[in-house]
View 1 (spheres, rainbow, N blue to C red):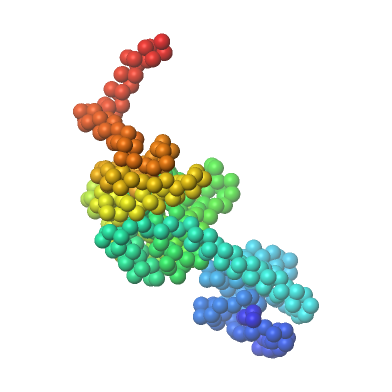
View 2: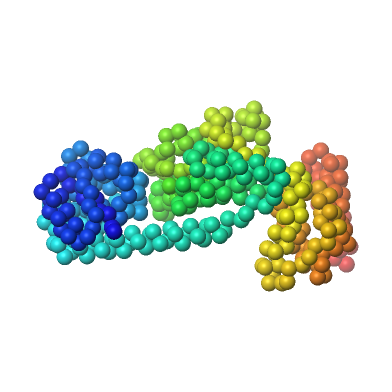
Length: 425
């Protein structure tokens, strides 16, 4: 049964609306002003809110802004005896579902409420479907090694809270997967998890990406844009490669974490945001702090809980399970029968130095499935894995003969120029 909150300072109007709507089998709650409305919304959930414009303490226009932050999916029907077109337009701009003048026409009010409830039901159904889709997309954390067991236990303890988490580990170890499971097992799972790769965004654009921008704030800002903090409102913001964030962006992120407020680039108005931040890095942030590349106060804000993801070399006992998982995954992608892997081949794969971690193992399994016969043998591993590893080792040895990458690059270019003529011939 739908629950409706009536917010009006006129007691007689509240009673009249209550009598009418209770006759229509709605569950009714009341508030005498905007402040009482906000308190009730924080304490309970409503399907529709009927909100008066002119009220003491906090009027309807101010209240609807706060409602959009607290419960943005709840339809709000504004009513007023002093309304005009300008008031109606302003109310809709602030997020109102509809605007009705007092005294309200009964038929129009009931039709508006039914439409608002239809919208509310559609939003609920959408969230349920999104939840199912998200759950199906979150891959299982494969493995039973002591390091993985510790991570799973930590996620179960930390996820239900709003504590910030810093996930550390080498590239390709699965830090993003840890972040997704923290979100999936949290009370925010019905809201989105928004990911930001801080290393992939140019330093001059990172602030716009995180906090959004106003129209005309810079040359290419042709329209207002919501930042990742606003997109993640109510959910989780995953800041990947946080160690590569510029110092100016770090200062703004620190403010957002401290005050739960952001300001769009080119804007003057503070916006309240409710997000849980999970950060990840492959860098030693303590060392970056010592070098002056990372703010210590931000580090302490982010690192309430630290989850260290072990490298694949540190959890070689999990490799057989991971191989089996990736074989099934890749064969399904290519629509081919699942291939068996000889025990000797598995043992050889356990002895590989996995510098690229899980990501590298997945690529190797895909390579073996494509190039091998019906069964992946030790010979296949020798041909298609060890040979590549030796080639990489040779390149690494060559690189170590030079002082820096630029010198190495110049050497390669000179060698290419030397033999370019012969290659063409």
